[in-house]
Length: 91
Length: 192
Image (cartoon, rainbow over all chains, first blue to last red; front, side, top):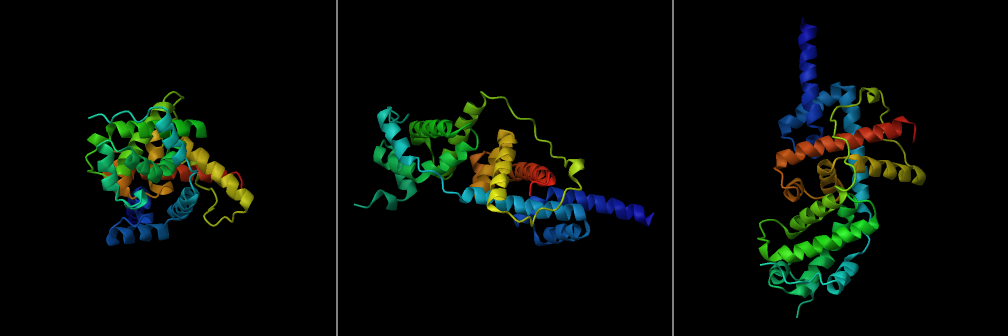
């Protein structure tokens, strides 16, 4: 019986933690919530792996954003001038 | 006279609203490259991204006198750009709805969080990431593009998408899990 309640509690924490992994990574949980999530991650190999690979995913996504954007501003301005994009602003 | 690059953005917006083209050109200089990078994630190729960026700035110019400044100019501009990109994208077949469930086949996938990356593997990973992002439905893709790739804050990104912060965060989490799961498949196939 004790095992049943322990499993129920584990599954409840599992669902909650899984829903809040992004908030944990972003530091957007309260201190108490952060401890709750970290405690479950410590006990749950699946959440541990998802959290670790989620962190790596975000780090790789940020690297995509680090790539300099190609310079297009001059082309946009040129086309705005040339193609009559500068009609009067609509009041 | 101050160079345009030293002028506060709010002043440029106000002058643009009054029809000052030079002020608006400075706004284009400040934001076009990043807007193009955002738009490129929603359209087929660079040419279409250029076209959509152009169209977004034309629309923004036409509407700037009605811009009330309740949000930052760039969040308003990004919203116009993303909507314009979606309009272009709607001519293509839509992606599958996002399934937030973990694929049970992947529960035993390896932990690749510390996988080393050679230059070649890094390129493969970038391609896998790019595919994963493109597979997301537009409303989910935008969360990852704005928050994780472009580095906007939750508040700014939610503003672009006209969502409450909690709705935005919920959508962002599902999108991130979907991208992560796609990388599970990439690494699960031994592509590292």
